Image (tube, rainbow, N blue to C red; front, side, top):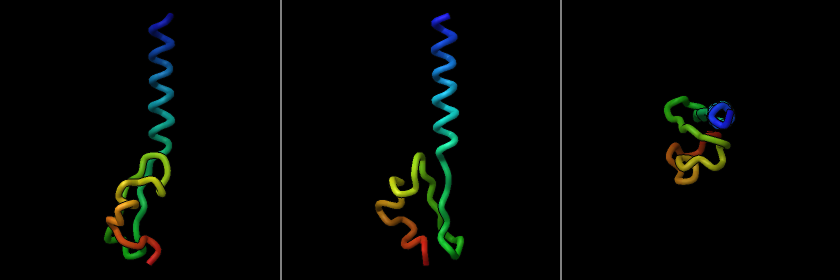
Length: 55
């Protein structure tokens, strides 16, 4: 039973984490960056890898 609970917990965490991922493109669609939980906390966004995504 303990193994089942551990597997269920791991499966639910993986499901939640994959539901919170995505990509953001700039308007020209020539650059994008991926994020895990929220676009504002993406490393690529923080360092300005794509420049301004609103232009």
